[in-house]
Image (spheres, rainbow, N blue to C red):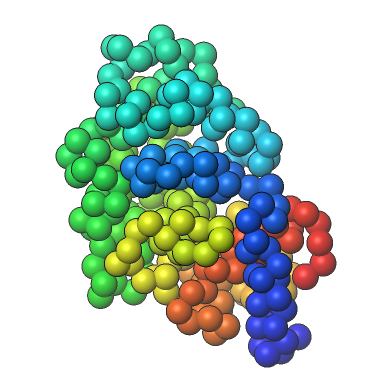
Length: 258
């Protein structure tokens, strides 16, 4: 399949899948909220826990949101471990314990008090001159990880992966896709960041179909893989290459033919 045929296929799948509720996905949880402060928090928390099956992710996030009274910003800005530890006790997701959850809310509380919003935190590290969002993402996750000692919680740092470790950072790139892009799927709340700077969120489904369609040559699924795939997709849409992520991912999940 040549580039022209590939682009035609990609565009067709994008149009099919960009309809709201076209496939089960945690992103639809964000669409329940109208306040931007709630949306960006729900997006980050959902992305951080977006490993495992879609049903498992949705079940956990829904249970967590119920604990916050479906007021995630209000809960977070008023959070304290001493006050809320019993409220969240016993709530865990796979290998991330309720201790990780307490650490997460404590960290997010500090970030909101310091920067006012997650967007402001990210923009404090973002430079338009950067080739992509990787340097800003590194600074963003540094802030979310810096006050947590690994001895206190062995899996907390898994929630906010840092590209300095050379991982694909699928869940953090997914969060940025939700925040920066704007269509029926993504919220586009964070203005001032070019969609061309985003990096593809690479999971097993994306990796599998990317290799199958020969969109990448690299075998190891890491940051270089994500960057190579993003550069390839820029040949089809240099302004918004990550728009193909949702369709490519769900073709794999839904076991459809490309």
